[in-house]
Length: 153
Image 1 (cartoon, rainbow, N blue to C red):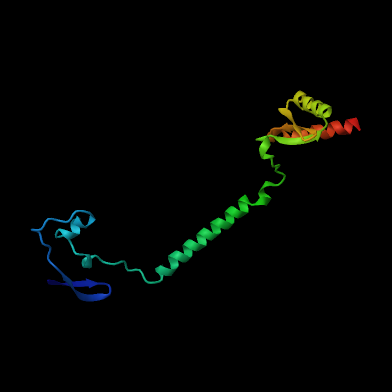
Image 2 (cartoon, rainbow, N blue to C red):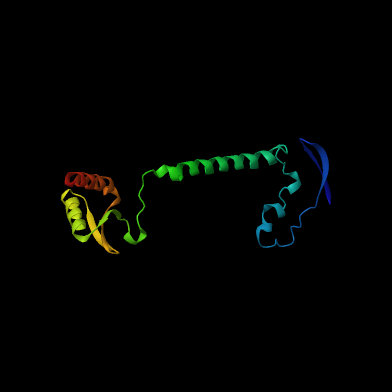
């Protein structure tokens, strides 16, 4: 055993270090690295000069940053961010219903929307017929239907 003086920021101390056995074959695995074959001992590796404050500071800052990001994402993606969005019935796929009425009126409304350049279709729902349009066309379709009803009233 060899006693090696260690001088650092915290003072000096004597550290015991055993001389490596160079005649033995190194053990396989990560322990067979440079530290076991005559390199510097772990005791001579200086520790960081940080204080114990960093043990509290880093987790607190990390927690604050994650909390701020979570609140920011909740605010951005919250229910109020999609005002006026229409939710489609999952059985309709991506299409959104704009009117449900009897079969002849639904066909007339569908044809009116198609003539206006909108993509529209219809389907049977219970005893009524529902006219469906793509999400991009919903506002224009509702406007055309309202104008048609005002004209017919």
